[in-house]
Image (cartoon, rainbow, N blue to C red):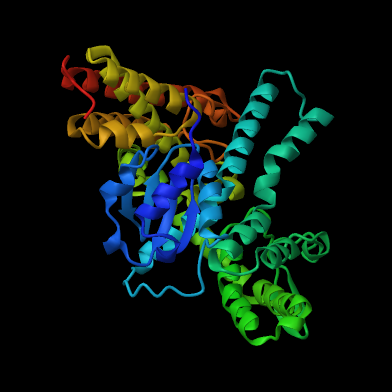
Length: 459
């Protein structure tokens, strides 16, 4: 197979979207190059999709999303060089186009969380494998081996405020390094020590002002809110402080203002706000888990196709980091295994070599990497009956997972390689997970088999 020329691909995409002058912001997620364009009217979607290596184009959530696949980071590096630097966000956007608040939120979430997905996914799988080794008796929880591997797998969650501060700084246009320092200040041992044995709700004072102390390790909302507010302060300081003094004065004022402001006001509001949202979502799932399984298991692929599934990811990450488990991740597994089942059903029935090879490649890719977009856009969204087969399979499997209250102990993407995330304190959780995912796969396979004709071709 010929090696892809990412520089050539990036050049052609850049030309097709109107050049770097038409780009006000850019980032990427696991499979998509996500662009904020100043003038979308001058862009021909078909021209972009005609570029070799582009799977599909989606214009949703305030972004022009170009589906590439798992190699998108390599393309992004070349694209970034052509544009002339990192512009995840710009100080101003003169496009004149009205973008909804919801679209802006989705765009921000994608930009903040997408760089962290490999670390989160890898840590989640390692955590699941470690729990599995403990259950089969190969590793003792009192051993140095367990402590080292457990610390490794949980570090990304403990230091999540620092990592999110960095990516939030890049997304909102503030210094990512000062942003990371703000996040790190919340995790300093001396600051945490102020809580003593009381924990959340302990109090201290700052120049006479009362401070309600919170434990910020593994939290999501407080630091994102803090860096969003910091971005306005940073841009103000950057505009009005003379160049020769910026090196010292900007970080000095930034830290002196933002850290106290965060621990006094923003942090507690963020913690309680994040917990409220998570509690509401978890309450709805616990009281109507079957309906939640049907909705998420069946509808997740629709959210992915629109590029707005990012709005749910922070809730799952927050659940895992706060409670150690999550109910929503299993439903996304149901969706992915339903896609696998659909592709296998097509491969068993169709005689056309092209569609069979595409289906089997898709099944193999999802089983290993959990990336469904190439199959979703290359096959399912073009064929309503097959898309419906996948949705039904995901909904039925999701209903079972919801009924049995299946959880994962980590935030991972649904594939065969991430099944250890279902390993918990009881063997029942893993068993019911396998049953539920098997239901998703088999139901979608059977439906896809019967709705696929022998003469079916790749559209």
